[in-house]
Length: 102
Image (cartoon, rainbow, N blue to C red; front, top):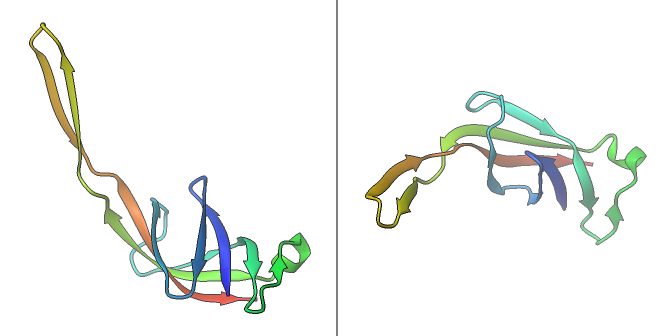
């Protein structure tokens, strides 16, 4: 069984045991998180997308706060001697899906 969840303005297809990195969420490290799926597909291939059927479906996950990879930002203007080098690491939340209840 898998579920399609939405967080941070993006949609992710997850199943039990998956680990994904999403934009930073509020829960602390190791804390539980419950997400509401947009679409759930059962083991037999039947798609469930009705709002009343999805009202009792939850995706339980554990979270961990991490930093993303280092990105180098380099600005350069020709013939003026302007060079600017900067770095950035995005704060992310790593979600591990523990259970999908239907």
